[in-house]
Image (tube, rainbow, N blue to C red; front, side, top):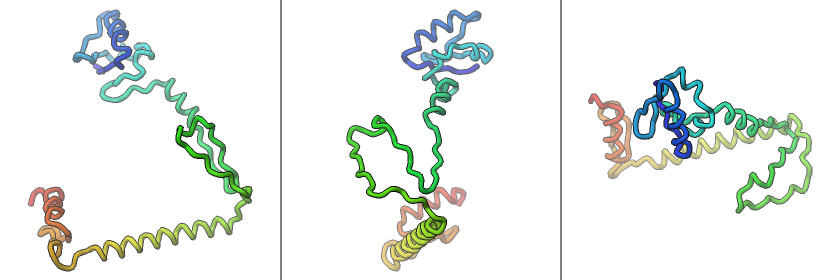
Length: 173
């Protein structure tokens, strides 16, 4: 049986459809119906939209088509401006950005290479900064010093962190 929990606004209509079937579709709980698989394929689409079917929200083929049409993928081409969005795409508090003074120039391969290299360098610098910060944050003495897991010797800064690690990572110990 397939468990169908109709949306609240179509629950009465779904119940009317269910009792009109021969044999009648039975209820599973106060707001769920147990629909035989062969009969489920004949259930009216408008009664299933918005329903929960076997624990998952029902998504109709009509909704899939509408979503696919609305989410056309635009692949960007270097040097080409992105398509403009309609005003309805922006929220009521949106502030438009100033128009650029210059037109986008065709991007040369050397410019793309330089931008890519700059991004890689920025990531490497950020990674090095994070490593330095984590090394500087490690305690050398005091409450957090010397707290290690007695099973895997992983260091911890607090007792609570160590105890939580032992419960989760080594439940058998």
